[in-house]
Length: 434
Ligand SMILES: Cc1cc2nc3c(=O)[nH]c(=O)nc-3n(C[C@H](O)[C@H](O)[C@H](O)COP(=O)(O)OP(=O)(O)OC[C@H]3O[C@@H](n4cnc5c(N)ncnc54)[C@H](O)[C@@H]3O)c2cc1C
Image (cartoon, rainbow, N blue to C red; front, side, top):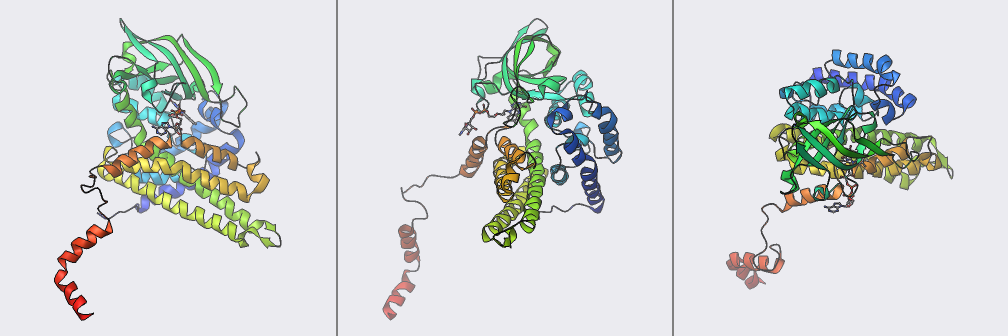
């Protein structure tokens, strides 16, 4: 099948519009308001005065919340087009919220659209899709994130209610969210993959206690957006169960496929920005009598980053195209590969970019060190790289048989022997001539 990443001229026009809009409207928001707090805190006046009118423009253009498939009330663009869009959105931290596809709200919207009841959709999905509220995804626990077998947060049914009891960690944006989607063990007598369920928990529920606001390395202690939270016997009506009992992991899987590709393509946009910064620095800075651009070591960094970027972009586009052809479930290996490559390409590019900028690069007067940390975070959020590498390795090993002879099947003496037998009559002739 021919692989084709081209888009029709009408969509290219949309992409051109998005690029202009991101540069003129989203990037200044990054500069004026910074990151998470402003983006997720919908009570901040910037949302009413600036963000909502900009979101209306995006809606008028038919580009709002494009990640939702046509069957879920979205535009059904497919992953390849979404990837091309996200590549542009990756140039700005605020851009995704202007386009209604800000993580984790985009993934949360996707699973409520997919598994929610009509009442849940009305109460949680509608305001979320409308950009009026923020949400949180509360799964990781302090004692472990990569291995759900260690999760202990429990949900117990009492009459018409579920009672949630336990701790969660790194629940991003909980402090600004109107509700959290909480994963809890609802049946401890079966393996966690069948015994965990998802619950819609309003953040003003009695018993929901944020123990700490954990932040990233550069943020002051107590000021981050990642909550360490305790659900102290938090009660929700039985109607707040999302999907069926025991379906938490099935639901989680729905949430992650497309989201990972979008993170990756936004990373393409970020790495391109890093390469632009590197190139400008290389032709602007002189040392020891020549431009940085003339030094072989610097040329190596520039060429390597360009190569990484091209390879990575094609990897992501190919994964998106594969999802469009065969669906997310059949493209697990491609998605895992993208998830593994994302933090590597991002942190490598950011590190090189920092080096080229010297002390300025590592300072808080350039965005580079923050981007470096953002790249590292992408190697943990949605699961650590090693776990996705295991998925990839399983794909490689699928249907591979062990050697029957004890020697590798490429072992030359055996292969040569078999080949020589086949051509014995000619080899004898050759020997005879010698
Ligand atoms: C910026 C950011 C935002 C996040 N937002 C959220 C959120 O909104 N909601 C939420 O629930 N969680 C969130 N997380 C948490 C994230 O999902 C976890 O950090 C991740 O699942 C890893 O769990 P852990 O930190 O407990 O590390 P651990 O599970 O303790 O793993 C530590 C390390 O051990 C190694 N390791 C683990 N498992 C394996 C394995 N099978 N094979 C080989 N090596 C392995 C890896 O090197 C891994 O990094 C966020 C994390 C970050 C960094």
